[in-house]
Length: 240
Image 1: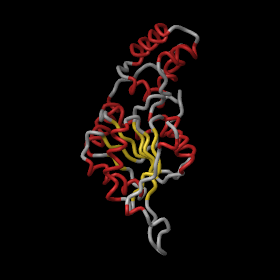
Image 2: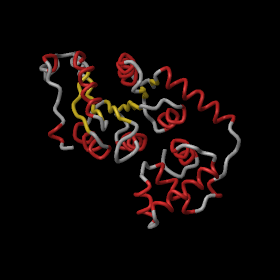
Image 3: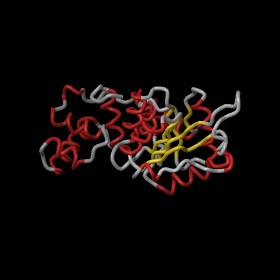
């Protein structure tokens, strides 16, 4: 996606380029989501709020999104959890590390506790499910911009359930019990890589990489990728 494809909103409310003395500047927003329909929907949703909320850039991948953030220096980044080239969680972590002042609001089609917990651990300031009402998204923005952490009610409940389940969960295998190959696959999964990319890095076949993943599932009792990512972060195998 070329940067020239990311126009600034130009409604009648955005024509005041220079705020009057004492007037609060609008929140500058970059949207990173691989679905153009959703990006267009967010533009339409925020158009009536253009005096206070402006989408100044958009991207359909983590790579282009990171470049857009560097170029536009926004106040808020709205990022999809599942991007074609990298996990939104990992991207949120990188943005938080590089630009600590930028607020991060994650959107996801999944609201399960494991995903919500990982989003919280990544340092995101808010999480809204794509299934939530548009009003929830509009409530989230001023909350995170005021320094608060905002999780939509369903997402917050999922986090609470996940934390409770985690506290009661039986002990699982320690990292020291994993082979180096298993650790490599686990790190790759946590960094958002696909099996083909992991296999290429390890110089093995895709089938072999998938076999190591199956071993991780058995050893760690993790049935989903999100659970494997949580294990990797918890035990310091990747940066949170």
